[in-house]
Length: 319
Image (cartoon, rainbow, N blue to C red; front, side, top):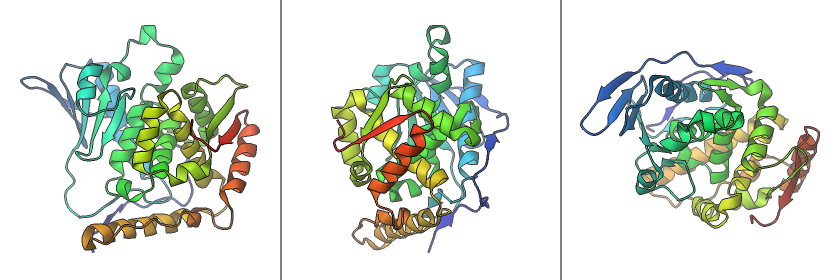
C-alpha cells in the first residue's frame, strides 16, 4: 500500500495555542505577475503586494500545516509517498478576475479540488483597513485559513464527508485570531464570535441553522447548490458543521475513538476506490457518536452554547 500518513507525532490532548514562527519569503517579478515563495508555498498575484501584507499572508499560509499537525488525530494523508511540491495560492486583484478562475459568485475564496490550488479574491483579503471595522480586520484571514486547511489535508480532503471537512476547516479558521496565531483554549469564545459575525447576529439573536441530519446527508453538490440558492444564509450550514465538529473535538467524552475509526474507514474506502476502482460507499457516520442519536447531540450542543450566550435552533430545512 503506497500510503503516506502524517509522520509527525500527535499529542494525546488538544493543545492550548500555536504561534507560528516568522516566515521568510522571496519576491520575484515576472512578465505579468509577481511570485512570492516561502518554504512550502508559492503565491501568485498580478500586482505587487505591500511588504507588510505579503508577510501576513505568508505567515498565515505556513502556520496552517503546523496547526493541523497538533491535532490529536492525523488529518493529512496522501496516496503516494514522495517529495511534496510547493502548494499554490493564487490571489486575484478584483472580483472579475476571481470569478473567471471558476469561483462561484458571492464567494471570496475557494479550494480548487481539480488543480489543488487555493484561490482568493485579493480585494477581500487586503481591503482598505481604514474603511473596515475592527471585527472585519479580525476575520479578514478567515477564508484564507479555511481554504488552506482543505489544501493541507491532501488526499484526505476527498475521503471525508462534506460537513466534516468544512466543519474542521471552520474550527481552525475560528481559532485563528492573528496572522499565524491560534488560541484553542478560547475556542468557544472565538467560535461564538465568528458565528455571530458571519450570521449578522446580535448578542441575544437566535442562530437558525440546518439540523445535523440535514448537513450529514449533504453531498458536495448539495452543499454547492445550497450556497447558490440560499446565498444570504449560506453560512448557516457552515455554522452547523462547525458546531458538530467542535462537539466531536472538545465536548464528546469518547476521547476521539469514534473519529479515529471513522477517519480510518473513510480513508480505506477512498483508497480502495482509487486503486481498485471499487464503488465508493457511504461510511456509517454513527461511528462518530456511538450510542447517541443526532437529536440528543443537538440537544447537548444547544444546552452547551446556551450557557455561553448563543441560542441555537436547528431547522429541518436549510432555508
